[in-house]
Length: 233
Image 1: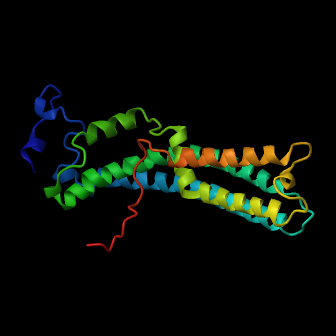
Image 2: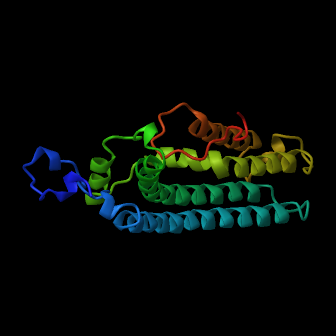
Image 3: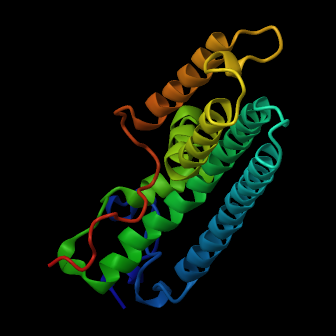
C-alpha cells in the first residue's frame, strides 16, 4: 500500500487537494469502483448509440420506400422526392439532438480509457490530460452538453445524411430530366411555382448543407475512429 493511502485524509493537506485522491491506489484499482463506473458509462453510451442507429434505420427505410414509389410509375409526381428530403431533414435534427447526448457519455468513457486504462497499461507514455480528474468531477457535478447543435448536425451530415440526401438529389434530377415530358427546368415545376425557382431552391439548400458539413471548424466532439490505414507501418 502506498504511503499516501496510509495517511488520514485532511482537506487542508496539500497532498490531498487532488480531486479523487486515493481512488486509484492499490486497494481501489481499476478492478474496484473505477471499473463499475467505466461499465456504467459504456452502458449509457451504448443506449444512446442504439437511439442514433434507430433514427438512421428509419431514415433509410423511408428513403427506400419513397424511391420505390417515385419510380414505380411515370405519372407519380417528382416532388415526392423533395418531400422525402424534408423528412430526412426532420430525422437529421432529431439525430443531431441525440448525438449531443451520446457525446456526453462517450467523452466520459474515453476520458477513463485514456487516463486510467491506457496509463495503467503503459505509464511511460504519460497521462493524456493531467487535469482529467478535476474535469470529470466537474462534469459529474453539473453535466452539460459539450457540442453545439450545428456541430452535431455537421457530424451527422458527414456520417449519414449527406450521402442519403445526395441519393435523393440524384434521383430527383433523373426524375425531372429523363422521366419528364417537358424539358428541364420547366419539368421541375410544382403547381404554380416555376421549375426554375424550385430547382434554385433545391440546389441552394443542398449547397448550404454541404457548407455546414464541410466548412473548417474547431471540433469539440470526442474523436471518431481513425480513418488512416491501420496496417501502415
